[in-house]
Length: 239
Image (cartoon, rainbow, N blue to C red; front, side, top):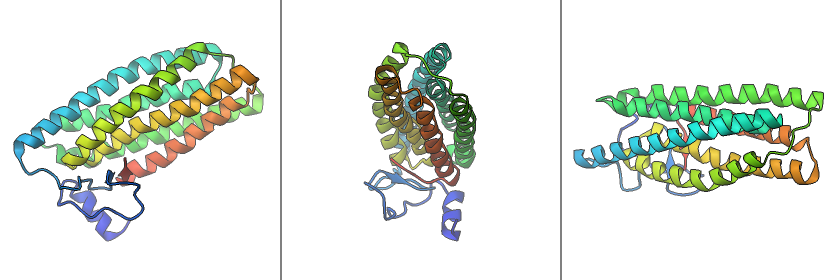
């Protein structure tokens, strides 16, 4: 990292920095995310945004606990590495959201910012390592995943729910100037992408009998998790 980037990490709630080149839109946050208009100075507004982040985090945790239980259970029954990996991603997302909840439960959220980001990053790496091992084992052993109606329905529902939660938290975290809140919203957005990839893999396996699609999809999930883990560790996120 550059010297300037290091300084930004030390001051996660510092004065807004210019939007870096290469971002798709204005919703972009590096180690020091900020809205285009700037981080609000009004204490009441910041308090309201903090409450909003806590509520969105609570909603994310609740949904992902249910998602994890259903996905892991269905994946175990169907011997689906991708579905189990999706469920474990939900567990990781709960850990990520819990880290943000912990950060905003204190009187000085800014002081806990970097720790929360590190927790999110490590969570991604742990997920990627597990999925890679299991997917490789599945490919080498030629274990075929079975059809899972529950998994298909779950992936479709998550594809609808997750973008809403992600967008709302991204906007609140960006305006508040919290890199960890934006990072956690990116974790939720990742779940949207994974839901789509999982849905395609499960349908290919069920409709065309392409059993290899399941572990391949799982490896895609692992690759994305590594990328997101690196961004969280560095404090670089764009919504």
